[in-house]
Length: 291
Image (cartoon, rainbow, N blue to C red):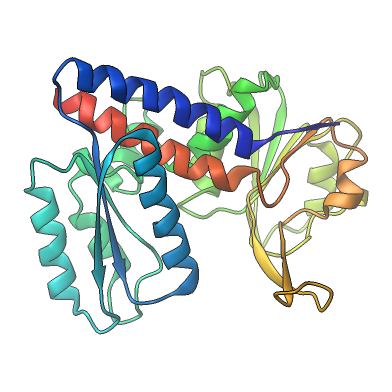
């Protein structure tokens, strides 16, 4: 069994991006600049945004954090997005989700200039991805593809079962893995909360992408020998033995599934670190596109 080490792979990627940034600067070209918009004080969102700002510093990017209070109106947020769209110094930006309930997430995401949408959520980029045209890929699926490629996991002709149909992970993952690409050419089944024969499907799967957000849902009796398992979930589970009172668990019951798997991602340290690395890669691409 081989661990798909997202922490190490993302560090390698960041080193490669840092080298690209050094070259760009030596040629007198513009330094890539990523901005992040944070509304409110959600603990997980603040942690994620902080990690993104830190990653920018590490690779030599410029970064801007726009920190808005919880009571910010939708109109005010849309104005901030318009300012970022019109700011030539900023190559790409993200609006950290979730947003407060009084703000329409879809309206906000639609307002982002697709050329600066380094999260890959805008319908223009989703449409281009679906048609296999150059676009910004959603960072988490993009990170999974990168992991599969770098560990030379064979996907061509394999049966992939994606559990979950979110616009952020499940649906784009199913499209990307069926396309003609290095980590692609697979036959893909999408399973979700209404799927009746889920265990039957997962037992047939050569590769499973678990992205449903239920802690330790996928267990050893649901997978076959030599399966490749990508665990996208991360949930806080109460654990009195831990100093902080909880542990982080994925959608996969690691102990039982890892005994059968040929490749598996850990939680934490698997898919999570790759998401930030691919966001940086998209920002570099946005900067190069402007050049």
